[in-house]
Image 1 (tube, rainbow, N blue to C red):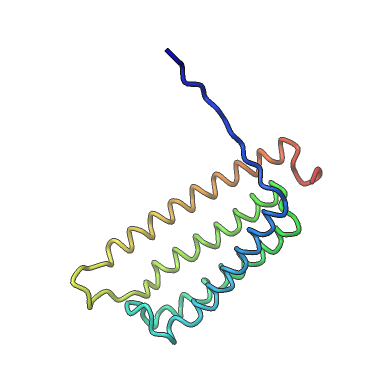
Image 2: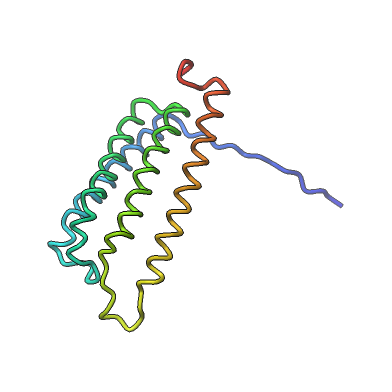
Length: 154
């Protein structure tokens, strides 16, 4: 009879690989910024209303913030710094979801199924997820500072 043993494998990603990942994140966010700012002109997706224009400023802020944070990570990605910036990005994301509920720039009336209720439910679930992420990153920030990978050591 063999007993299962807990094994913990830790994969460490080198600094070069991390920088490539951050650069890819910048590129993806730049592309998303372009797409978001052209959706209404393209008329796609068909259920998106002109009210999306009222949501676009905060979406733009969110994408630009993500671009800037990932550019900063290329130069400096200490644990405490990443947690702090992730908290900031999560707060912005929370604002995007709340604003999306306020504006709700979707018209599902041409469809046989009323997608409004599931869409709102998904947005509420995302808000809960972002709130959890804020708590998790806050704990990670405290742990990073307490364990000595804080501001003074990095």
